[in-house]
Length: 116
Image 1 (tube, one colour):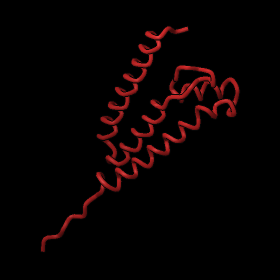
Image 2 (tube, rainbow, N blue to C red; image 1 turned 135 degrees about the vertical axis):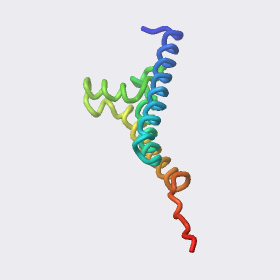
Image 3 (cartoon, rainbow, N blue to C red; image 1 turned 90 degrees about the vertical axis):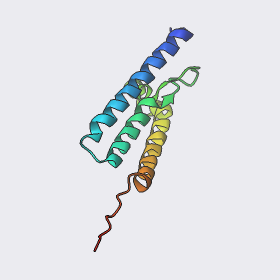
Image 4 (cartoon, one colour; image 1 turned 180 degrees about the vertical axis):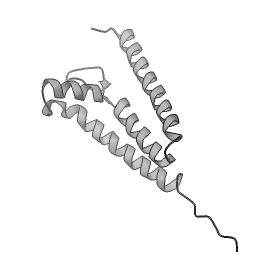
């Protein structure tokens, strides 16, 4: 079992590597896709990678919800993964709503005015 300092080190490494992956993904996609689609994909990936969940009901520490959900589905089925799937679905929905808000405000295409 992990002690507190090794648990924190593992969480820092996981969150740091997820943030580096998200920045690289945003940079790479921004070269090929419109910015509103980049925002949607990066926010969805951030929701999937960074949402925490308790691995068990009696656990005191949290783990990434995606990993907990995959392990619970593999071992106990979908019913056992409900505690990890609920926050994942909520955060994915929040990411979609935020991406839509960004699309309607910041990434809105302005019509060119014709000078006659």
